Image 1: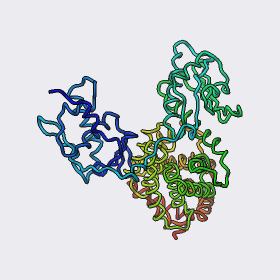
Image 2 (image 1 turned 135 degrees about the vertical axis):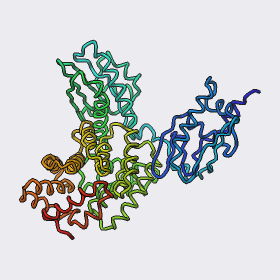
Image 3 (image 1 turned 90 degrees about the horizontal axis):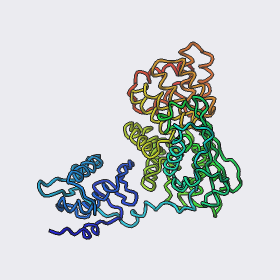
Image 4 (image 1 turned 90 degrees about the vertical axis):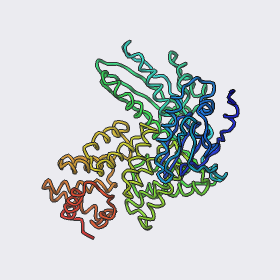
Length: 532
């Protein structure tokens, strides 16, 4: 019997829909549930859409093969594997139970309820911003200043990795690798590259082998002014290059995003005016949150801009993310008169909204992981942080935060490696004090008080206004017999968010290292932090 391939293709509706409790967005090949967003392979998404077009009906295997693999010769094993992958992805919706039923010798049918989303909900996932709303960047092939023939492949490897990683960053638009390879053997100044390709920023780098070391340097140039916005330099053992490729790419990509966003946002007036768009306001808030040490002043500025952004345009995911992040900080450090629980509830709702509007934005997943962890949902927090890293492996804060979650889950021995990755990816990160605090906590849990004290002091030096590091410093100093220093750190704590043991007990998430937590609070009180 002839197969009607055109009819199979026509039956697929590309608009967003609800399958069980999952929100399915064909435009981004993503599904979302309870703030968690998962990416599907395009063919897996097509399989789901074909099944959802006729919920409850038995679709023959040959119908599904024609619809999902049109014009491609595949076997039934491919369909079997695709159905298995889809079942595995959807099984988290425990309320619905089975999603896809196998009808022996006939085919498959979708048994979960299907609902088309109304226009108002469907429009909640906007198309990517137009190119002129994003920050365009061209990555020149790194110039060879003395690589051995055996390492000649590294230039193209680094270029390909950087273009891929930068393309994953929200609102960055790198020029394709193939286009940039045309500049490999001809020196062209960044300003000419920018004029040729219509970009504003150019990443220009060099590579050289000096003995057993590989030297990598790069500059991020604003082609309009020919000013160097940022620069990075690294020295690596030649023999360790294969293991460090991702760190090199990630470090350069992270530095480029931080510095480029900081530079681009400087064109936005500090006092938002009517002509400033919601996207520009969101970027300005992002810079305050991610490119500045966290203080009440930076948080308040970001909060004002985020509120203004969501009021002007509620479809900008970055605005909702910034709002949720500000609310989390305010709740965590007592930077608001509002009830802490209410602030955290709002932070979760706004971070979830950000993941719906921008499912491929690692910032949104990071914020949701941060807030859910703080509310005591440790597994959910860890899952969101891992998903953030699935989206962007160079997202240094997620490595550091995952280190804290794993320590609280009872695995402090894993924390040092996760924090090491964070520092390797972004050694000058404005938020690095939080990673020092994370490592200090883990070392304290492991009974290594001298090292914990050292890490806490590094965190205080990185950001004296970040209060968490003073907690470990006070306890470790007391345990090391440094009573005067312990009292000094306790005095600092009494004037801030962690002003009493009662306050700290109310803030602690459920910990699987409870004996340590109780002893820690006892020593903190002995150091001079009042009970109430």
